[in-house]
Length: 190
Image (cartoon, rainbow, N blue to C red; front, side, top):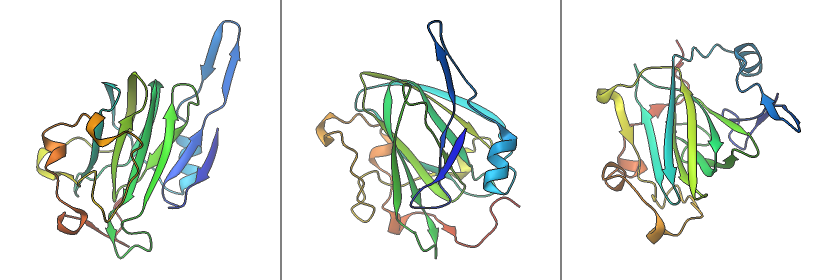
């Protein structure tokens, strides 16, 4: 398992080692000790989630405010997505910047998205099974989002806008400048 910091150093790409032969493959998808040693802090994952989507489905950009802020460890079991993390910590040197990574069932890559970031993905394959761990439970009161097509963030989602499939919720999210945000430098893991 290897870890690589992205252009936003708090967002980490994880490449697990895949052991394959004629029977198929085996892959260790999560090791708390290795992730925590790399990050330098504990991430107490408490819930696993899974979604199934078809081509063009865009989910995001979502996050939760404290006291229910969440870190996510995301991966694709089948299919392919463009996965995006946006820094929404006011005062951060990378505030409003994003990282976009292709995750697929084939490449087995994962993305660690810390608290203080909005997250979303768009499905690039015909079908996709997406799985992720979170370190805090879902809270309706703390649930927030940002517009997927905010020009200030300028994400190239790859999929043409008219082919995107969005929930009603995701078509009405506020722009970054109007959203409830995090403050940079505040320990969100305390």
